[in-house]
Length: 165
Image 1 (cartoon, rainbow, N blue to C red):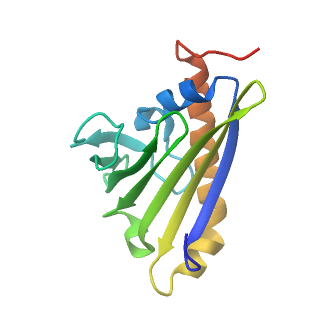
Image 2 (tube, one colour; image 1 turned 120 degrees about the vertical axis):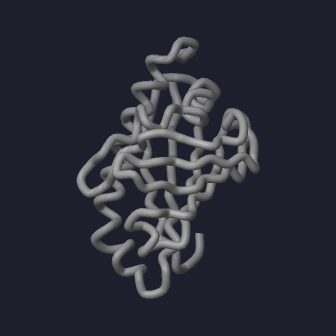
């Protein structure tokens, strides 16, 4: 994060163990959890993925339900604990607002389950920070919360979830 970036962080909790939560969320089917909401499209599909989404350096294209797309590159993976990625090359309205986004996830033990932390760190283009930090931010926060809630549902419904007593 830089002094000019605009971070947006959401949290959730699941009853599943951190390792299971990590194993489900890292390769999750984006079209299953990113649904259209408000002004934002959902994810239609992922194309040109260069391998199993599990190690730094892999890339893919995320295509949205409005026909736009973005390039994604996995930059960090700490097995069972977290991962990070960069988004760039937007062909939708974000191309006019940001040069890119860094996404970061962490999965921490939390009593009988896992605390999930997800941050999108937007890098606004010159003169656009006020839009991203102002009217855009609360809308994107709601979009992220909805997607994260769907991810928690998938995590808890996926076989192998070891629930702690």
